[in-house]
Image (cartoon, rainbow, N blue to C red; front, side, top):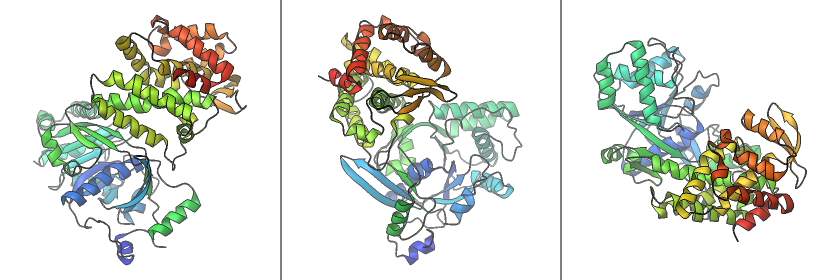
Length: 505
């Protein structure tokens, strides 16, 4: 079976949308991973189909590529397949799309590709620059020099490209930073300006960056598991499609891309102009970040450690359990969403929470609970504790589900201790004897190792008064110590599901 290419699709009689091979290269993209290809480049592709906009994406490998990615995807005309698989509005979705928005992939650590990257940067066609170089990608690296070809870091590469564009007298561009850090666009600009100062470049360039370029903070959200790992399933998909595609990638149906900017920006982005679901331009993405953290991430951290203690292993199975699903739904609808009403539309939050349930129930993703439990202490502090505090301030009482989630979190770290390894605490799950590793910051592991075998009342008191864990003494929250102690007693005597059930009666 042939690999996907324009020639292969023509031979197979493919009738779906394809951009012309010679469409102008309007987008320069730093990053070539599954997320960008399944999310951002798919958005560009669909925007082109719906609006008549024509524009190709030039992908740039952000790190030295010993993996042959650029050569491999270029050999198939930069075409690839995105499978959208999961639940949407309660229905199972399994659909494919050939994405034709990319023209080529460059490895700038090769001299010819570095030159090509800089040529794209000064092109009259260039309008947009996109990046997703992982959370560590937007970082200041003082070793980068102005004449490196290329510099090691992404911000330094981008500074080079934009400086060349300014020097050539070309108009500014839109920059869409998609890295998962707060204020990603603002941080990217700050680091570029640090490099400009280090390198002694012109103030006129700084003025052009700030006046003529639109460097956007964005918020992205979708799950992209990547390739199909089951060999037999991959063969079945290839037979269904009629071609091989080593760069095929799988993603879930849910998508959200919030872009910070004004109304004029929306007109300049084809996927926004097309009215595609999940993408929007807003003056401030901060409230939507808060919604994501407190509903999506907060739900995970709220029920997952306790679900593991109760004997579950996969997120989807939890969604099929009446007690756990009921616990999550009550936590979101009655405790989390009311605290978000100050900043966000309540109906929008309810719709987002409903989508979370569909995402957790994805029949194509075996999302392991233990992988979510990594560093759960810091996660609970960032995702769930602020909601608990806001709820108490608003209602004058404790939120039963969030308070119970803290008790089940404690129980996760205090099952039967087997030992301590470099990877974390080695524990044995009491419900069935399964051994597992609880990984967290060293001080958290030290704490629970020291408290192994402690009486629960003393344990809860010491946990709640550990300000290093929570940034505060949680015994000062009226009634919380007593509630958590009572809930932990239920976990010990009847199991974590019983504690969940007690919270939703």
